Length: 617
Image (cartoon, rainbow, N blue to C red; front, side, top):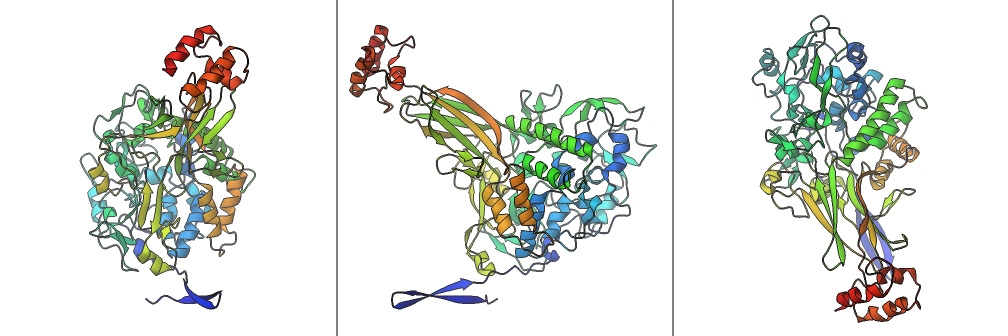
């Protein structure tokens, strides 16, 4: 295909310089490029019912199911303004790619044929029920297996092109009839709705349905690169591992120590009541407690009733959902939903504080501090949707008066700008190579066009326990631009200690969306909608605090003082003798010098002379 271009003439002195500017154009994609196995649209015999149908019985006093679910992002994935802004940008550069996005965010709309047009303008209010009770509890194990309902084999056999090859990409299989499923054999559902027991609901593979994402427009090459496939055709293999990886949360877990029974002793950090080992996604995100599954009088009291917390970390997005759909917006959300979202935000913030451990120590020569971040999760830190998501270290050095001497990884809340050049930022950065640049007219290199990206430029996110380089390469999740040894699930960073510093405050922050990404979605959003959803996202972002980062861990007032270092050069030498003597004689009252001269910690006096000389020599 020959690319259209225009020529820009620039006069430099007497010479004319010809600079070709490639015209930017969308890929020639159609819904065929984004076909994925599993249940297909308009194939259900019973529609997906909304959560109100379920809350009549499952919103009991225990509050473990409807109340918790309706505060989660699972409940509001179809209201997420970040999703809609991404959707418009994706459709603009890769037409009809939004079909794949709607598939996971609003499965009711997709299954019932309302993902066309792919900009989600055909969806109705009930579709925004998102990943709801009826959808999840009608899921069929694509792999079949012992203990699954007897009719599953027939459901799988009737699928067009067969069942999915592995969990991922929203390639769900849904029972065409409204037969609901769950893990308990003694459920009292008979009088109210059809029910079957399914062990699938206790496995991480259920979560993997949507939490491994690949782009089927690209096909993996023998050298490990990803090339555009033949457009307007399905992916040649349909295997997610032959496509370009976008998210690998489920696969990261599958290659971690958590996936090996009995899992990992979390020491109470994660898991349900009295649970020592955690293994599955549900153990952390739906921890067990004692409670009832419904308010039916005969419902058993279970010691292992899963809370439907479904905790995540996208708090600012939940704020944006309330702003747009709450009482000051369209008023689509009930008061109970708004309350549940507020409670979910508290749980999200708490979960983040348990996701990492922070250790700080001073190097032997007192020239720097070592900060170790340990990943306590069952996947990379951070994981999930990669664009704009990051974790970073903030270090503040202070003198003996508490004054700030220097800061690394400073974040300005008013501008939402992070100083990245002097700290460690854990993130993944993607981009496009020359072939995609040529096909689209867009510049080669770093890119936020996730549907066009086909190279990973950086991935220094911290792997989980059990990390193995070969195993993670096999799931397309190898580190890029950094080296982690097999078995390593932590990372060390060294920060030079400035002169006169006696204390350091070290903090670890998480942010769902960077300013750069939100501005990208605003600036690259097409204006074909009645309301530009990129601009709407940006305005919501501003109105809700600009995606303020959440504190994950902190070590405050870490002692980095070097006694006897009066001149602040981080060493004790003959250069410190004159100021030491001056302080001792009362001739120098500079507070910084006085702090450093107090070697014994009991006030500056003759008792400090001997220890100072020992440090000196």
